[in-house]
Image (cartoon, rainbow, N blue to C red; front, side, top):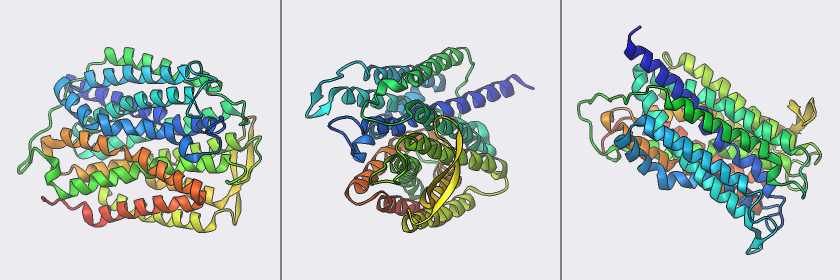
Length: 430
């Protein structure tokens, strides 16, 4: 095998690993939000509980385009290394939230909550930079197999997404007013260790900046293409759906009063496992997509999964707690067949659908952009802020109306993704 081929394989494997880092950091926010919901001044607020997630994604709006520019000027390896250092700092600040400002308040809200939010914001910069690196690199290195590479990377991303809420849920155990952010310090130490190890490994991995070949009719500004603009909006709402489904489901199952009414002694652990199952199904879906993407187009895949997801969400809204089903879950002590609302099962099944949405939307949206792909990736990263805004709005509705009513927000988002798949993805210059 040629040296160039070896270099490409190493680069692809490295990008796939970084895909997992993105999920690991992102999926800390929602389960840790359960801890903050129990604190004085925050108690019971889903909106405030989702603020860590919001701060994580807010960073995308600020760093998205600058990250794209950094990638273009400094290259893939430099951007990835910088992202890992920023991620290490962000997790460390979250760890400090269990030490700094404990016992004091700002406007009746715990001071250390603001420290935590700052740490989540810094982590958002990290995952934004990592996302900016991995997507265009896999797109360029993969050629005709680009969506397949992106789906494989997404599979590892889903594996980390599966494990993270399960680990947090098992560490929290029974959620009480005495539960603190310091109770998950072990996981935060693990996160810092992974960031540090990844930095050292990547430092010695030879990654060359791939060059995208120009195409006829390419434009410097991707915003001149209608299909890219619609694709950017689709990414905005998609990330909101991907995060909102398991994040709000975690809150819903953990809440014994306004939620599913489960046993408080095991509700948090079960909720974390159920949310983790959603990410596990995303893993399965991405593995299947990676096998069929060479034969089934991105357009066909996106059309099918968005239609099925819309049906599942609407059914979950209408059925809610009316029926109960049994699911195998880990309750913090061992596995059991837990009784959960049928809505939980339907929403978990959405993971099979959302699993392929990122890769297919990205593939369709940047089709025909040529060397403008890197700039397009920066814009895409800015639109990922939808992962913070959409779930925050969803949980505002959950506070004002009900958990199930809040899923109408996600139903509308999936309807737009279906429109993009069927009509809006056709390559067309503005």
